Every structure is written in structure tokens, then in C-alpha cells.
Length: 320
Ligand code: SF4
Ligand code: SF4
Image (cartoon, rainbow, N blue to C red; front, top):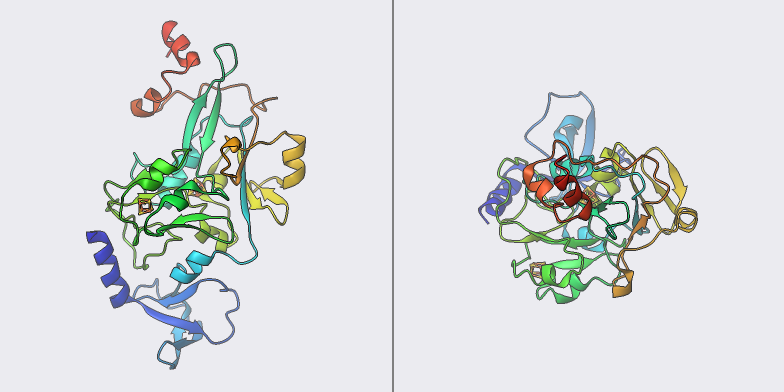
């Protein structure tokens, strides 16, 4: 909670909330803040309206796009309905999705919003890698069990957590059938930022609360892909808008409905009635031969896979 207090103080001391007057139509969804920090003046002045009604000119380099406030972060991005598609035929456990997500959300190493599992349906079938973010369900069990309304579903499909409201009771962790939520035993201290807390940004983390994959709504507001999707060297993760019927991994773009139809896309454990917004393309017709993806991993990570028949077999042959 110490972090939170520090952040609140920083917010009050360092920020001046501003409204745009004219000529800066590029910033449509966030709030502008004037910071005491800058990398030198640019010479370009922007007219802004302070909350007390004064007009002032501020150098462009003193302005930053702040995370959106509580109301917008509860409502979601108007006219959007986000969806993710994960192509299991292409994943080779490069773990770049995990790394970049952790960097982007300032997570400690043992706290993963994206988890990559090694799946093997039977001893006789081939193993495959299975990246698992939060599924942002349309019928989210986590939301129905939260006693204080700290976790909520938005109009754009994203399920978020307001960590300043969360009391850390962990009901949602128990309620989620996909185990996507993680408890922040210790918030990462290395994070330094002048930006005020927003549920859309997830940083800095709040100790003693629950967090999880948030579909990177702050990036979506800027028209960017989530960290995991842009970081994957194999182009495994597609992100897009289900109403616009389009998904992209940054290189290839598909009509969502055709991709799901042509590649037999499915939703994981959809029979639970949760109605997830993440689809999988089955690991058939692999675009790469199965790669072990086990080399160079931390022992802690390798341990997670030791009960898979494939890994047990490797161990027996002493090739691991
Ligand atoms: S841990 Fe937080 S988000 Fe989860 S149910 Fe409890 S109060 Fe709600
Ligand atoms: S969508 Fe964002 S939060 Fe979720 S796994 Fe990808 S990078 Fe992490």
C-alpha cells in the first residue's frame, strides 16, 4: 500500500490536468498531463485549458498522454469488442510474449499474465505449446464473485481489475476456472513513473491485490497491438475487433470469421458457459516441426512441464 500512497502524492505534486483547446486532434481518448520532466523544449507550443479555466501555452515536450481516468477505464473503448486468436500450430515456446508482457506491466519474474503450458492430449499424441492469457469472458465468473466490484466487464469486452479497490480476498482467483489470475505478494519496486494510477495501465502494481492479463487496453487506445502479439517472433497471437471481423498479428491480417471457420478455431473449455473472447487454432498441420522449446529455460519453468509424457520420455532417455 506504500506504493499507492507514494503514487498518489506524486500525482498531486507533479501533474496538472489539462484540456486541449485546438490543433491537437490526435489525442482523442486519453487525458493530457503537464509533467515537470522533459527532454528539452521542442519550441512547439500547444494551447491548453487548465481545470481552473485559464488558457496557457505549454511546450509540446512537457505534455504526456496520461492513462485514462476511472470512469473511462470502467466504460471501455466505445464501439469496440476485442478478440484474440492464438495459433497453436505456430507456437514453439519462444516465450517472448511472456517477457514483453512482464516488461510492459512491470511484473516480477514469478508473476506471469501470459503463461505457456506444454500440452499433450495422450501419450501417443504429439505435444504442443499452449499460451494462456486471460480469456476476457462474456460471462466472467470472477466478476460475479467479487464482493466489492473491483473487477468488472467493460463494453469493449475487456475484464479489468481496479487495484485501488481490490481488497485481496482472492475470491476471483477461486472463481476463475482458467486460473489466469495472480496475487501480488510484492509489487515491483523498480518502477518509477510520474503517471497516476489507472486500472487500464496496471502499473505500478498494488501489493496485496490480484492482477491478471488486461488485453493491454492502454495500447489498444493508441491503436497498437498488445505486447504479447507484437513480440511473438512466430506471429502466433492475433488481436482485433470481433464486430469489425478483423484480426492481425502485425504482419498478417485475416477476416476473423473466415480464419475461425477455415482453421476450425475453438474456445478453451467453452462448455463451462464462460463465453471466452480468446480463440485457438488447433495445433494441426504445423507450420514448423515441433520444437522442444525446453533449452535455456529456468529450472523453475522447466519443472512445470515434467509430468508431461513427452518430457518424462526425454528424461528416461537422459536427453533432457
Ligand atoms: S481479490 Fe480483489 S478483485 Fe478478486 S474478488 Fe477479491 S476484491 Fe474482487
Ligand atoms: S494481452 Fe497484454 S496483458 Fe494480456 S498477455 Fe498479452 S501482453 Fe500480457
